[in-house]
Length: 393
Image 1 (cartoon, rainbow, N blue to C red):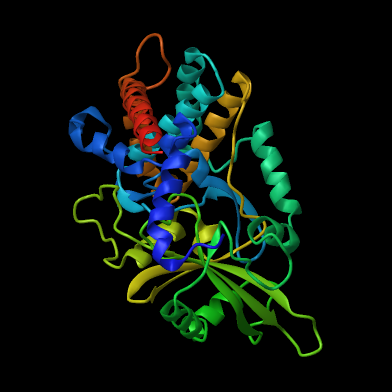
Image 2: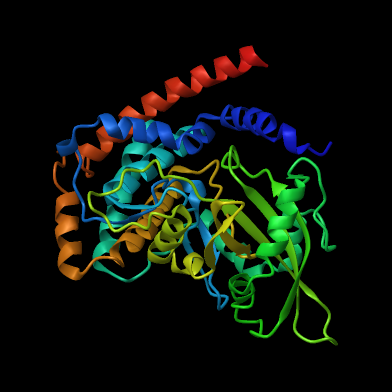
């Protein structure tokens, strides 16, 4: 049954609890704030202090994947920048290490594999600081990348709105709008910056006309809780004779980041502009397709969903695949950080990262101890979450 506007928050909270109770890995992905609660209590000198650059702020597996740019080129990049700030790049490394270690546990891989994954992570990340050469993709990632290259509008429509017809069906994912939301969206999509964003893709002329066909509140993941989140279906016509084409727009409210920013960092005060600035620095493919604006008095980010944009879902990995994935994904994050550094800064950061190695582990002790401690914290919190959720159900 479609969800009424007055029932949104209750329903979203219930679904968030259910999603985070599915597995310890799902809990890690949905508990960004807990990571930063841990970070707040860590002694500053126990972690390397990297050069202040734009960081993802929530660097887990689900926030990496194929992303297309305005010209149609596809690359594996960071795909969610809600938490982006100018901060310590070590925070992204630890968060990714936690996500990889949690995924390894969900794949029933032995503990020694987790240790080797952290070693491969550092190899991939530090190599990206000193080389522009991209490493080979491991098989599971390569399969997702090839799928992204094959995808067309019909795949996106079938996946997101269950049909290729120009409507958004209300149901479990898409909910009815309030009157003021419909009015505000109609006004927003009549403005020139939005038209320029939509006609900015390489296959659309700048004089194409557009028309809002349908819109709905979008229940997507856990991030919709308490925020504005909408899906908007738009018709784009180039000439009167040509059949109309469609695009699906994602509108997401930008909120204050939980990630700590570097002191005196030049970060936009507007939350939406912060997200777009971080995306442009870390993920050029995505940043070039985003627009920061306001809706109903709140900062929001607009972007068109493209068929090539996919999330990495790495499950049931073999030990060899886990090691290859760790090295490759860390290199993606390393390249995102490195493009913001000059050569001297990158060399100094690489040297700082490789300190505190032990004799029996070819990875920094600060990374190993951080990931082990975070795993234990999140595992306990996950079990407690499941207990509370079961008793409340």
